[in-house]
Length: 203
Image (cartoon, rainbow, N blue to C red; front, side, top):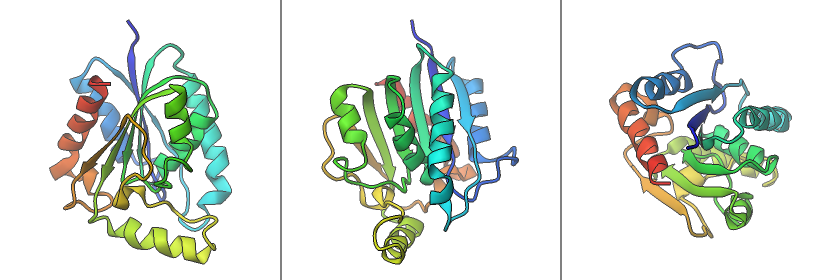
């Protein structure tokens, strides 16, 4: 039986040295409450210059994925971490049991973000999108960044608008009362982790 492994990837402006970042707490949560293994991919990226580091970080995440051959992999990202996950998956042939995209700063069109193709190939089992129309960061930042870069380097808005042209095996959970980072606040953290675990177990 293959071992379940969860890998958590943060968004921008996150200090990898912060031992209480949501990725650290997520690893602890899964280790304490499940039989699964858990790991984290942490990095720092500024808001305006994230594209300078995006490919490098995606390559490093792909290398982390490669450390778990034969595992049932579940990749969990927040914000820009979701974009990194989409890029890393395209760099590897490793089968991915499930993706969990929380407030994803990712292109919402699955015909463009690369995940639709990987789902069609069978590399990815299921994609779960945790979205909120109350995500003001994505609502304004994604739009402004695309205007500022003529649509070339801006943030995606899947997390506040939901998936578009989504094939089978793409599922959306809406919680419109939550802001961009509220999923990991103490009042919501357990529920977020339980949602991820439940989704993964039904993959």
